[in-house]
Image 1 (tube, one colour):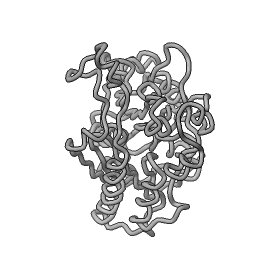
Image 2 (cartoon, one colour; image 1 turned 30 degrees about the vertical axis):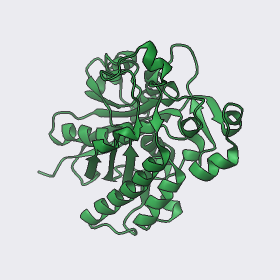
Image 3 (cartoon, one colour; image 1 turned 90 degrees about the horizontal axis):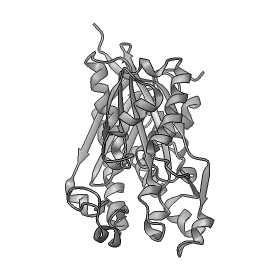
Length: 332
């Protein structure tokens, strides 16, 4: 019997309508468009506006579009893994909320939190359910409403993040396509440099934690940048070497969209030209768990069956990794 692999058989994305430009941010904090673009590559980002809107409201339209493209219903889904750093609430899981909203009455699900590496961690986790034969249709969702935890008076972080969702459907493949390999890593020593201190069991919400601005994302930019550049580039080189891949073998690099300079350094280490690298950071900023699937969604029509794709990410805490897949279908 041929080995069962988890193949992406559909992809979709959703970003909110509201566009937060660098020019608008200039009116809120001491920054300017040239400074932001030169250091990050970001020109604008999308923000989910409206009372009572949460991460699940980003995910639902993305998933509904995916189901329509694949020609299946929510009742066909068996498992939903939601990769997010901004769940609707501490519990129930956002995966449960999404399942209810879309009518996935035959699915179970849970949330997975690995910061910006969440989608890769979720993809690798979900693949085990496919490869074992336990499930045949698994949704992996990367969604974050980062605007809910960003301090728009902190110019070091508010310029970086946006809201969005990308999702993929995994199904079994026995012809060699799908997820080939993953190298995933964590180092909790990085927790002090990139975190959200308030709201957990260590610092439960209180007047004191709110006054201390502990419910906003915190980043020590220089340290995080240094670690991200090194580790993202290293893990891409590692997975290429492990799978005996050269730069000529790689059709696409799909990097986490945190900073254009980090993306460029990773591509250079892999020996890949700009035209082989998916980049949309200029439009969406850093959407955390959503960046990689949003890239796959935007490039879907350019992807061909058998394409070798390396996905790479680096996130808070620290988390990082690379995943190698063979694309399973031609554009329609």
